[in-house]
Length: 414
Image (cartoon, rainbow, N blue to C red; front, side, top):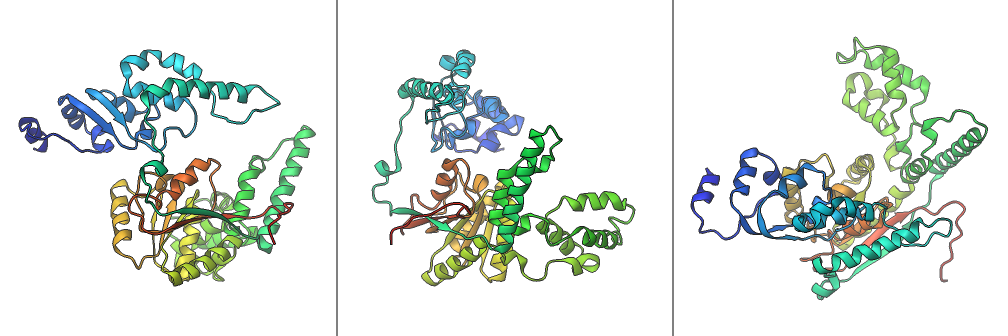
């Protein structure tokens, strides 16, 4: 009905729609293609960085005399994303040169010269060529140029000391990695779980519940017997259930116990183990101070399980919160954002860095806590800008949780 009305009544000048609608139903796509727009403006243009995506292929077919991409994130992973964006805004100019552009931009962006290889130097040359190629097609404005009256944003690092449980886990992961290296050097088979030592160390620095330490093997056997009393598991193989539990961490296991309170409730963690972490200690201290000052806080993490733990922490502290992560329905996200703006007694908004770090306005918050930093610093910058944007009336402080390495000597003034 709406399509027919818009098609017949051409008194309107601007049509606002979503990527989802423009790329979803076949009838909607056909309707939009029939309108022959003078200009198409694509907000959050970085969503078109993948030239092989169905979204890209659907939207590039919309006829327009002029295309404009608006984005604060033109480049995230590699220079090939620029090739896709250029081909999108001017397909007649760049589309037939896609292969050439791909060969020019095929290496990931680097900025430091690597003395051991020429790859970084070659990458610098490619970046220079990319900038020269983009200059006629890109208008760049920095926040400081267009938002001169925006309150200040400051950043600081909050050192979080590992507690005894974390220190033990951390050293165990280092020992496992050392054994794996020695085994590999001796030509022996290496356990796959010990190869990603960086991720294991990150987990140890965040929270012990990301490992299985509260549920030893003998306890798992008892849990298997109990869960097989449940209808859903009654006819399952006990060994298979044990194998599934064996690879679960403490957080996942205590959740499983909570899901079956009658048979498994007795095995759930009961000593507030979720409060047992150096980062949680600092988080708790900061929240208490922020609550006294009337601050509102955005909390970012790379991992949904960390958000799960923080939910338990906030519940224990009796602090209200909302949450958005990758599993949150797109339609529900704006409702949650609106609720946070309206209900000022909700102090904390938990967000996953990827899902909550782009395209949303939470300028009603003035504190940003990054529990675990991304390896891509641009992700953290985007996350902090959810608060430091148009509409912000208070200075914004970004606090990044970092634990000092055991072998790191830190010098400070005084």
